[in-house]
Image (cartoon, rainbow, N blue to C red; front, side, top):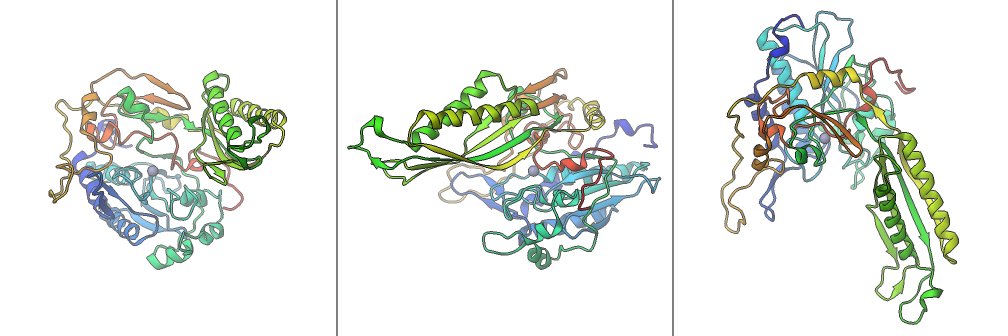
Amino acid sequence: MTSPAADTISVDADRLWRSLMDLAEIGAYDDERTGLRGVNRLALTDADAAGRRRVIAWMEEAGLAVRVDRMGNIYGRREGTDPTAPPVLTGSHIDSVATAGAFDGCLGVLGGIEVVRTLDERGIVTRRPIEVGVFTEEEGVRFGTDMLGSAVAAGRLTLDYAHGLTDRDGRSLGDELARTGFDGPADVCLDPPYAYVECHIEQGPVLAENGVGIGVVTGVQGISWQEITVHGRAAHAGTTPTQLRADAGLAAAEIIVRLRAMVDSGEYGELRATVGHLTVHPDLTNIVPARAELTVDLRNPDDAAMARAEEDLAAFLRELEDARPGLTLTTRRMAGTAYVPFDETVQKVIAGGRRRPRPGAHLPALRRRPRRPGDRGALSHRHDLRPRRARRHQPQPPRVLHARGVRLRSGRPGDDPAAPGRPGLTARDTHLSEGAHVPTDLVHRGRSRPVDC
Ligand SMILES: [Zn+2]
């Protein structure tokens, strides 16, 4: 930065807020049952395309040079004084799940544009270029692979693989890129930026529960997914003695209970274990299940502890098989990624950008819609606007939050550089997530390029 006051500037929080609310109108829906208002902008639908066009218009108004790559990823570039320096990249995604709030992803993109607007207004020139990125299909809801656009940009997945993915109706991502006009000409392989930083809502309750406005994400937990199938023997519920049963449902239940005991034991560090999918067959009231299928999702920020958990679970499955005649178990690995630490320099910059909230900082007005006959509540508000959060925003000293599996170094309320002093944004909606949507391959400076790029 060339300006001595550069470390004290703030963005225009009201302007950022207006951008967020304007974008939230595209694909907005009212949930008549709950009275809540949300956003539905699945990737490369007409609503997503409209949102993209709006964001590109804002980028161009802010003087950014916009390029769209062959994955539909959008980059807006502000040049620095050193044309050879790799850029500082920021951004996120604007595609959504079907029942999203207004801030998921959008805060990272619009916050980046707001930073550029602010730099321009202050006449601040940076040495490095700044780029604001919008990554395609980060949610993965429509085409089945999340963080897709950034994965292709980073060379983790090929462009052909991504283009060939199809949605539920059989439409391919490549065709949808062409249909919406976002099959851009730019090379999809992204040169490593100097640094990548993303402001994102937390997708868990840790910060809110601790009354902390913003956290600094230190890394992405390791992930291990597997599917377990238990084969037993169907039998009549009334006539088959208990000791003669090979009950696949019971074995599935034992696996679930065992996983919880493993977590509670503390022997596996900050392990989290989830069985989110469980089916039994033939799924009838009076039949002992012949087969059970369940998935196991393990998370751990410690790779060695994760490996121990996987080994011990495998040993338990063997024990179960040995102890129950007639039962066999098979497993299928679905996913496995190691812990990814984030760049400490970037973490320090975020942690050092703390700022106390403005006295009397207030929540922005909630968006209201007219009462209609049959409305249960008087007001509708976005899923992720909760006025009660404001009460939590009392100044407090920085401290380290070390929740299981998510290590967050806290800042102070109002720390959010994109919306200082706006508790309505910072309380629940602008803290960083535990890694979801963060294009992790872009995080590390100087990381070697994968084979595809
Ligand atoms: Zn997101």
